[in-house]
Length: 280
Length: 256
Image 1 (cartoon, rainbow over the protein chains, first blue to last red):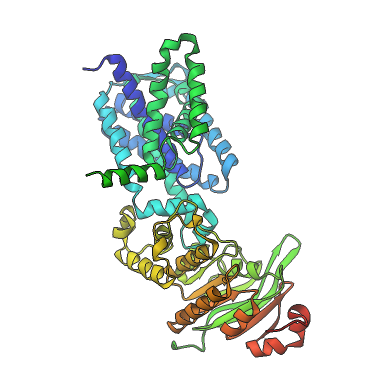
Image 2 (cartoon, chains in turn purple, green):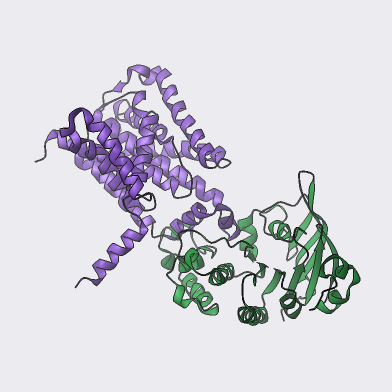
């Protein structure tokens, strides 16, 4: 049996993985979102409200939260279509902060006092979601749709000029990413059984992006590796006491300097696959 | 020859395009018949690439109308125009950074069939797509480069990948922006034969080219663009002897 402490860390990895995947899917169409903690917040509050006050089963509540959040995502995606790069990043950041400040003032769901009453879910339940969605995205990566997303990512204008509907692709990615972030939020709420608007601030969005960039932003497995590193690395560095976080920061910089594309990328996966195929 | 060749495939009527105060195209009218090979020549900055961008919906015309098979396409977004039958290449090659040659040939084919099939791997989403991609690969002799990242290939090969990508969309009209730029004589000849073969199969071609010999040997009609306006139109022979053209573009050293 693993200790409660380790179980908590593993739950954190699962939740961070989902958040990272929500960024990864949107990034796959060339859009950087710094507001996914906002979608996570929407998911957390909607799911909690549904389980605590409407007595819905957790799974159904999570699905409903994902649906609500993806609708919000699609609505956000329309104005976002006109923005690129740093401007889009700023706009999504603004959205995230908007959600947080709205929740702070929304007394019906606890406001700044937070919201409680959820039943805790098991580690297995969290990982069933995280693993399931990771698997889904790994399968999606081999699809025709993903090829279209990569085209939009690489050269949006050219993608339009070879017959791809870039608008629909980008909006779809935002909707799906928002849904995944909402699942992360719902699970977070039912892991910690207490939520407050501060849980879904800017730092959380940055964690998602960091996990993707650290692990590798061109393959879904990168999100998994990045999430695990972000959660476990500070733990392994505990022996450094006060220097722990400084060492963590240094390690991050070193990894990004030596592998700017992230720990894993397509070339590395292809090499590994080749080696496996060659082995007797 | 296709039937109804009296009806134009693509028609531009009085098309203009301005950027702020600059008029890049003014009152351009041209028609491209079915099964024709048409050339557009003109000095640098004459508006040739702008013309391609307006035809393919990358820019919206400021005035005028475009029709494809009598259907107005002036307001259509790019992807719709491509799906309706106009594919193109780019003057400064635009390949997708991370994709192999094979992936380029798959992605440019409009998805056929139910939306949910998109979630399947490309080879199952539309089995016919793999066949068409294979054909394009053979047509341009790209078999050896199938799984190479397209951007890492030699320049001439990248041009071929772009043309192959455009062809996999099964266009009625292929727009080529300086297809022989950077090619040697043999490669250009090879390309000419290939384009003639495609034309025999019913493909119409509109091309921008600075290589006069290439244009004059290949095209049936030639339009001359200068300062955004068409100053002459005719067969290669007519264009070669047209005094206006000689003055504006070909100059006294028109040795072609």
